[in-house]
Image 1 (cartoon, rainbow, N blue to C red):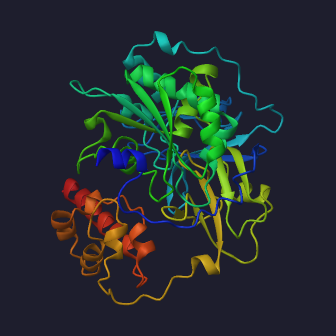
Image 2: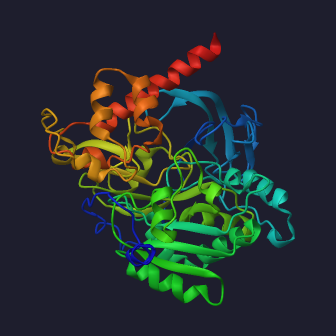
Image 3: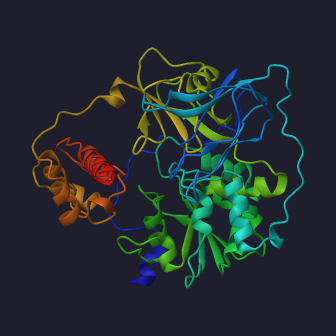
Length: 448
């Protein structure tokens, strides 16, 4: 059985949505011009919000620290441009709500060149010093979750990381940011992977790439050399890029419910994350920009772009020729797990892997019919949950039962169940509603 899985390089269940990557898969990464205004939300990562260390009216340099970590599970923010702090207060977030942020007006006469900084001797750092450096650089998971990377490297006493797994699957339709990074910067992918592998003391590293990116697989293999890094081609299936699914595909090992990858000796990083680490230790550049795919039927000129963090989404779309008149919805991230954008003046964040524009034919909600108990959602769920039952309990607002009896919190909201449902039931929406309600209940109880 183990040999069968190792040859298959995949996981059980899942779905096969159309890739839709042809729009941008062959488009080289280009840089977006600097604009006049940038907004850096203090809570654009999982964990405690960052705390401002600058004041309104203060002049800042590109790459300068503007907010320190608010806790260990938090990270820093750096100015994406040279300019002046114009406001520290509520600004629109992608969901339309107001959240604390730092607004910076770019200096129109500045070159916006990052001041030269010496390379950092990562090999001479202890693991604690390495963790502190990664936190100071503001590096987070670049696949979309934006979990502070340094937290993954803080391995509890008694645990050992044997395998570093680098996620190059990029299984979400339309997105090609990781693909282009692997094709255009394979040496940075390998270097970042080796830095993390050595600092964690892992025996080996594996870069998992879906087989619909053969050029990326070939280039990475050319740059590995004699390093203990394997480039592994994976079956094309969604959600191949989910941590637990990737571990199953690469190593045929399962992460138990409620456990973390480190509990079975594995650390997982996104391709963009290891590139950011390589850049920081080689050049001293903190995380102040990222690659974003702009695509979808509603975009005039699809592209892969290097975008400074804090850039208004509207400006990125303007660079791509704007939206077509037929556009009905714009989302951040991929179509399966992305978030609808309520305000185009909201900024690009550390976790912004894509901006996708869709027309009515892609966004029209299907007619919902009663569940026919076909079992397709069970066959689609990679976590072996019962999505149909969760949806029924969600409609009845029996959220505690969903959590206690049907493992609600094990769901990662990948959307495979909704994709597979022939009755058009928005299963994942019922699950998200239940989780939000339970979180709010917990907050209210803690305040009492």
